[in-house]
Length: 102
Image 1 (cartoon, rainbow, N blue to C red):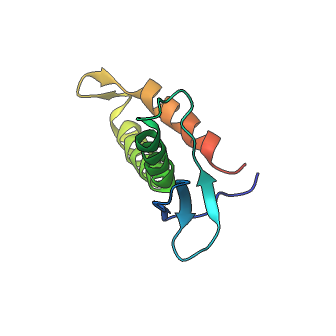
Image 2 (tube, rainbow, N blue to C red):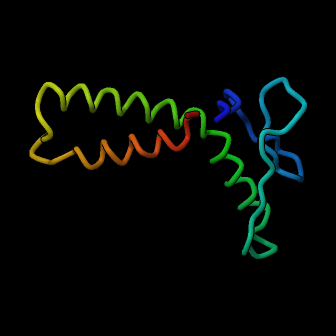
C-alpha cells in the first residue's frame, strides 16, 4: 500500500471546500455533505474538510499515545489506575494499522 501524502494539510476555504497541502496546487480531498439540508451544507462541508485536514496530525498523535501506553503497560501490567487498558490499546493499534501503509 502506498503511504499517504504527508501533512500538514489545510482546508482551502473555497466554495468547493477542498483539503490541500500547503504550497501545492492540487487537492488531497474534496468533501461532500450527504443528507445535509441546504442551510447546513456549507457548514457540514467545512467541518468535514477540517476533520480530513487534521488526519495526518491525529494519526501521528495516536501513534505517540499508543507508544506511551504500551511502554506503561509493559512496565506496570495491563492495568492503569485500576482500569484494564489492553482493549483500548489493541483498538488503537488496529485503527492505526488501517491508516498506515502495509
